[in-house]
Image (cartoon, rainbow, N blue to C red; front, side, top):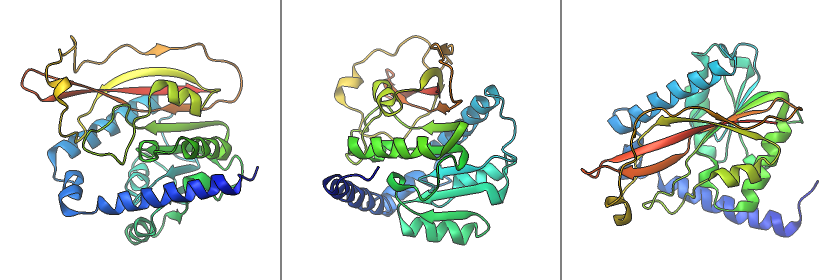
Length: 269
């Protein structure tokens, strides 16, 4: 269904804001936070990979061989290249990103992979084109609820029945970054209303600063840093869609070092 002209205009304004926000992140002081030799960032990436491997193994996926994979918001293609280590077929990997600068760099670094400059709200693929869709930190970069809903519809549309969706994003607002907004449990249900949620907890420390004063006097819950049990909701019959993700709730220890709990979410439809 074609969206109204007013809705498309609003989408365009939000997409322009997102482009500007990502360009600001290229400033040396900001990009240094995500450098490969930044210990905090390196630890976060390793933790994410370990969590992803466990989640996918638990879902019965031990190899990406034969899977048609789409990375929505692929950036410079780092995750796509990582999937090659998981056995993915290069010709079956596809990435889309809003910024032409990212796509140019992705094509330079991995010319054998298919990368396309496109908005996630209008994915240039037919229905059921992919077995697995990934999104890492995309939804929190979209402040418009209407655009989030449109992106969610597009992701659902391009997934084949029985496909899977791997989600990695935050449920805590970063007080130092007004260009992102949390995605909580209830909103995930709104974006994917026919999905059922499973939860698993892991630890990651994103570059959140400054820590709000209200958190500095908080009490750290017992077991901060330990994995919590997996919680499952009843799963209805129907398409096999699977969604996992990481979402942060921040506590502060007595020494004011953040202890960040992230929740891996599994959803099926």
